[in-house]
Length: 495
Image (cartoon, rainbow, N blue to C red; front, side, top):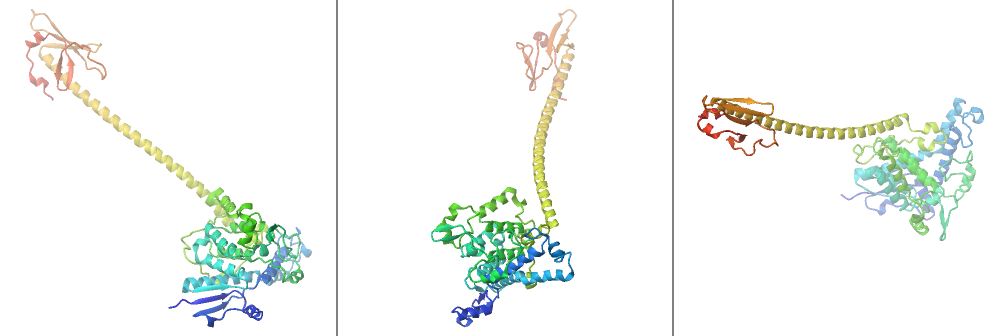
């Protein structure tokens, strides 16, 4: 069966027909075998710019603090929010809906989910394009990749995705976000005027309101549009829907956008790779990815850029969110951080989980240290046990030798006494043996040494020795007298 081809046109159908009147248009399915054309109905960069301007005006008007420092509770006599009536509160909600920002975010998410589903479920080929091919096309393709491949949901994969589908693909960051641009062969650091419709800075605008008339007057000339910001907003929505699927946190996305908009790094300067090469951006400017990686390395996985709930095994395949799950909400960490600072903070539950994770990490380290010490103690105990066993063996051998010496001494004593001699032990460790054969004979004196400790020699080195088994006892005696005596073998038999 031949593979089906889907041609995904990001534009509304009416825009494609209008472009056809100017020589453009769209493909025809009759020209492609087993193909189908789908229109996603995503508006162009000008509609996105005006929608974001209305959205920021809503935040500035109904936030806890506006750009002029006045609380929304005090603006217009307190009738815009909590101090006002129900109709004014309903009007503020209607203003958020009228901005259309969340609807645009949902349209981009729905189109990307459709592409991912066709690839994952049907193994189909999907061709994606818009008017120019570097705005809505980059949004849809990169989001579809993020849903299909878990690799792009890691830090390294996210970097590769941005480099591939945005920077290398040719998204004009200088025009869309307000980065410094190229003028001939020189590097022009000035910014284009945004006419109040869209600020290129991540900080709040100094003015308290926007001018839709000025925005309409510069509709054709102004190419500012929050396309990349809208894409990161879509990524934050996916992170909210699938909190276990992403290695990075929402705080990382906020810091990432701030780095892009700050012009501190050269990664997103100019409109193309060629312009960045002409400017020598790589040599002259720092790398944003290296900066963010250095921040993470300072604290390891306890850094706020890491998602505490990340579980790569839980979502190791494609993410295919159903249409009902794609209903977006405000990204509080980014959109509300100036208008509602307290409400934009991470939830208490997430903060508590991060503290618990830090404590758990500390306990893990303490456990590892304790286990190492326990191993050292066990090794020391084994060495001491081996020494104790050795000492026991030495002691047992000494006891055996003492018993054997005692038996030999007893045997000699009995043998000597059987000769009619007396054995006397003195305090000087000597023993005297007096032998008497008859009253008329001279008393014969036999001196025997006691067994000396190891290391000391015989007290009479010049004396002859009588061998008893394997032991020697020095004997100094009148051997003529011994020749006249009778010694029975039974006295030397082992008991």
